[in-house]
Length: 483
Image (cartoon, rainbow, N blue to C red):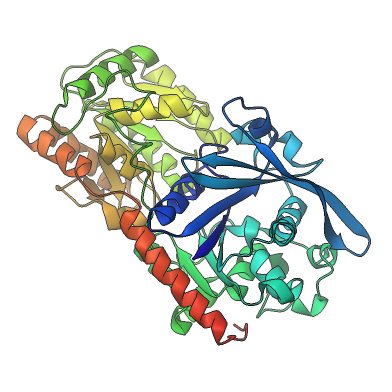
């Protein structure tokens, strides 16, 4: 099949979260299966200026008609990533402000409407029309609608897949969104693009796509409930009943996350020779300026600072954790109140805690490789890649039983699990880690179970290929779009 994967972030070009890792790895796995998978993303300024990439002009300039009164100029450029064709949509505004990954997401929705329209227009200019277009998260939610409303002659036979990486981020804007693309205002109804008084990008993608999926089986079930449905649980339950909603667990790029050859860690190691793991631990402690407390496991966190990620729960349990004792390194950006609390915690516990308040991919790799345990006490977690990366590096995860965490981490086998958002339960899991850490044989088994797990995209890519086939078949019978 011809598969076009559309995302506003793709690793290693631009990475804010797990979506970028998926966009950089899944298409490569699909190509290994023999599919002609390609990726398309915005041409951010930092990509154009990065000397690592050889980017060639494919279409110097083409018109993107937003509405009869507004046409934007765009360009299309290309490169290759390990044999994967990657296309870039460029224009004279919006993307110029993105000088690093932290600045990829600018306020507003108009740039995402432009990108959606430009993707379809560019493929028409190139005369490369896929069998399946795979859209991701709210930023691309209008593509399935535009295929049917604005480009039916070219795109009506093309199947659309819409992946929800996090239902909490939906893209909610006013009615002028429809006017910007000269779309019918009667689409603004509760069965199509409207939700709770706004034009909802995520809902639009889910309604108009042939198939909708989330990034783990457990999360696909959770979002059909009021607790996790973010006010769209009715739609998710309906999609499930129609047979249009499913869950496919993410994988990780086993070549990128590889302790045997990772260029960002100070020593390499494998399941056959774990000596380098201890070297990584020692160098990490030195890098962040923590003493080596004998018998204290070193925990790591690489995360957005938010209550969704359980950072507030971790703060409540911190004092008791450090008294066990344990040591902890948190790297992340996000909620200013949480950042302030972590800074104060570092001042109070200089021998136990370090807060790395910046986006820094290389040090994240050293945290994964150098720590003994990895904390993910999330309130909800659609899939989670951190626990998988940690296991790949022999770092034992501690997770709450939710979403993809429940699908990948199992108590006493490859990690430790707690059930409720309760500081005492979380602390109990940390204590179980410390106890296991005192027994070298038990700890080695935990590490090896994680390192030897098949965390690759190979199995999930087969599941996606099956999903694509279902979507293609559904287009052949021209299923009418309805909620």
